[in-house]
Length: 459
Image (tube, rainbow, N blue to C red; front, side, top):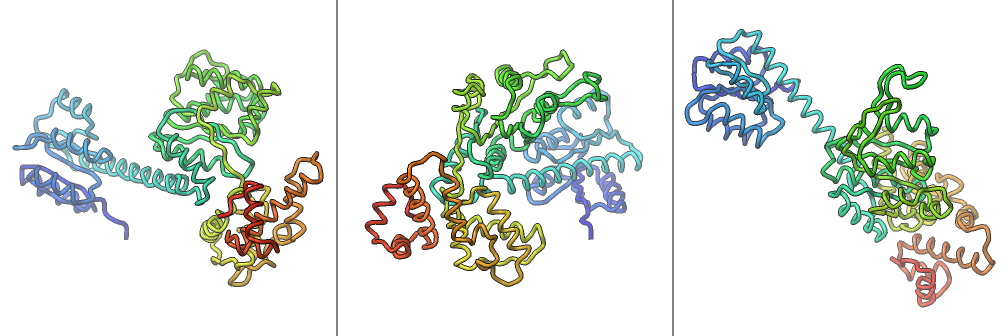
């Protein structure tokens, strides 16, 4: 059964109160009718109310004071003011101070019910928006960045410190490491969390289309511009604009972005008016932008404008201890989304996942988990259920070799492979050094020497 909307009616005239209670109850609302405003304010503290209707002139506490109290303590709660002493001036005054509507007594039933209905719809819309915001904060907040490794804890610490500020953030990392997830965590941990988070992939559009997408355009500014279009800068006003693949911007677009960062103003394509925007820029790249600056591919002044706060997201192979946590997270998430039975990975299968190099990082891991859950038939997911590239010993070794630079001497190459094998042995042994040493056929002291040599975290 649909829950009835709850109205709180306050009026010191008992006859009016009884009439209002009967009318609104018959219309299908849940009504609490009180003739003492002090009692009503106490009731508000203890109950969920959707709309308040209050008389203006009452002893002890006036309707204006009720309105002020509600505005201060329950800012999303609509208040309707009723009075038998209505003037245009008083109506304007209460509307200016935040009343949803002003109703002069005597009023018709239709007039009152229409005003109440509009207030209830506003209340419902605000509740829906609040739930949506909370859902987004839950889905994209910092708690959705899964991991306990020192590498990911450092990232979370930076998120916590950077989020409250207005500073521009540059996020670097390989493809699939979760750069957009970190960008969203910054936004939803910031004072801008209730404002828009707008994302743009700078590589997805050619320069002319990207300019129109970012800056918007005026009607008739070019062939096909049949209507005014607001750009992403405008849409992100008071919120955050996430520019993914920032290293792919053309030189012309780099100049225009630099101007926005300097002046906080945008001009639509084909327009002459400058529009002020209050936005925070978070950019991401899988390139070494400083190296791109040296090559002349990226403007140095833009680089320093973007790189106020820099976050380097580690690849999955450098945070292997997080893999079991990520696996558990993706099992729960994908099982719910795909409506498939939750399954667990055998210890051996989890060892293979922990030992694989993951060139596609977290995105690849999530895809593998989804494949196993959708195609699996047993209660457990075994090594045989894993895709060939993950379960094949040679493929595991090859993935380590593929990550190496082309020009390397043999000794350097062998050391890289040895380091990869040590990491895999640690993961398979749940990061217990004695177990890892035994599986490698070496002593614990030799393992510790090699951990230090290759700068590998052994826990």
